[in-house]
Image (cartoon, rainbow, N blue to C red):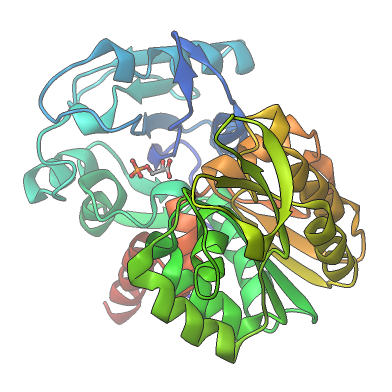
Length: 389
Ligand code: 3PG
């Protein structure tokens, strides 16, 4: 890949500005999943070993620009970093100044970049301000690589040297392995409530997959081609597109479903017998058995999104069994990504059995769809500019 890599350039005693994706879920001031921070730790530790001065940038949530709100502060993340990187001095500041005093082997975390005016619009002035903080800019926030913002894109264009961090590199390599010449059969599992937001991805994945298994509201839209789906989530405007896709590719649609009826009971029904007052919440046992067979024979598995409403005990079985089927296929290269998918992986404790778990949600899907992302393009551009000087 034609981009500079942090591990291949000399960062010893340099001022490094690192864009990480430390956007973790926080409830009542407590971080509920450390996965993204933990995935960034090797990058930080590598730079610490090189005795670099490290400045960290990240966003958290989607605050209103120009307005500080405590619930979007990176403070809980800084506290966690202090715990994980004992003996390292970690400063925390909301000021972007290039005369900030940090020593070699120390870290400065700057407050949530999305508090800064101009961040989302990739403002030139802000991008330059970030770039002036460092000798080398390291882009390692794969989860935010699909955003063209000052801290993910603009800064990289203005920095003297810009490179990709090891997490970004390993995400790109693993995703490419799954989508470029993957070992066949390829099985894709795509859940989620809206087919509209994932339609292009679904189409691209269908092209490279031997089987696509759909779940949630996406599956309901496919069911609606021929059947009533009652009160279930589905998108009428996409029925026709779903039909065309189904005629062309091997898309598995549930043959039975678990529904919530008007008395709020959970019952299993064949997919063609859903009543108007019923709501599909999960797949049924017959569908589970068929899907398990398909997954068992797969050599590559691409997984995004739960199959049913796994948060509710009554409607968890489909997601649970399918997750275990993916985890138990030791022959296959399995790759998973997306916020809900990570929650499922944590719930069923199958992390160690998935070949690669991406830290990206939207970025994971966009990479599959477009085979690149804006921040990667920015790094490629920088690489080529340097070569032509
Ligand atoms: C994510 O959670 O997918 C990334 O951190 C990007 O966040 P965003 O969708 O708010 O840009």
